[in-house]
Length: 184
Image 1 (spheres, helix red, strand yellow):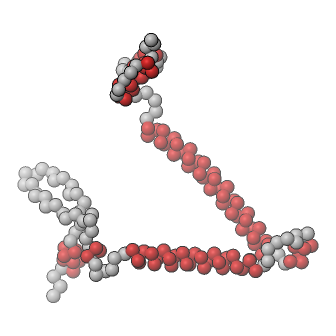
Image 2 (cartoon, helix red, strand yellow; image 1 turned 180 degrees about the vertical axis):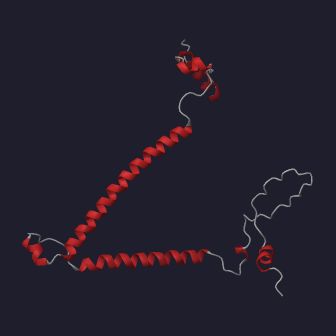
Image 3 (tube, one colour; image 1 turned 90 degrees about the vertical axis):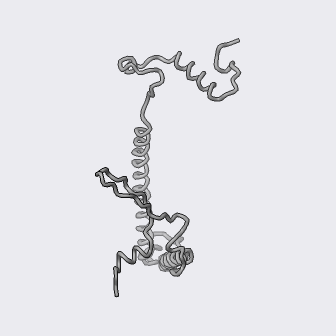
């Protein structure tokens, strides 16, 4: 029978992991900085998570920026081709040997359809926001399930600093009093 972690019958996953750690610890070579600093076997070795996230974020930014530049160049090329096709007279295109191209109707129709689609999308978005907002007379505009009343902290007289009050909502009566005061 072998003395490897796979040959042990263990009912707990935690014990299995501890056996694997013990096996790795025995076989691992000590690192030079561990010997100098006196770090134990349980000391974390390797990069910190913040360093890894920073490295991955930096590399992702470089790759994304390169892709955005390529996409921008491609869009500019398509726009230039569209403008050349739209403004070049048909006899010139035939003289160049270009006979298979879309109708010039699409030179006006595509931008017009795009503008109308954008206007309709903005109108739909605005209407969706109006539909999901409660009416001004509803108490839902003043109170909801996340509303918290301000807590009353007693001021200390002996000069001890008070803790910062938790975030809370102001009542509509207090807001009106602060904004309009005693208007008679």
